[in-house]
Image (cartoon, rainbow, N blue to C red; front, side):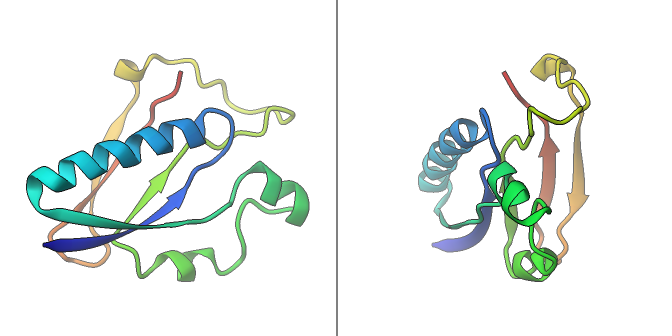
Length: 114
């Protein structure tokens, strides 16, 4: 069975709920395709921002480098002027990027929110 290390950044608002559901979907897909996922959660959301003045620590990229993928939930600070996130899920963009580890995996960025 192949094991994939996944960094999880749940985000804020609806993000943690969406990430919980995504983890359940990954678990089901993993059973079907003989994959096991090892998750490590990073609490880099609004609370971290308000406590440290940054959304993530300066060495965040170094901390994320060893992972096969990043599961990123919605991050938004409602008290900040943010770009409206009002497009329906089927109108949002998705894009694939080659894996930074060159392990034959791809990164898929898909933005979905309520």
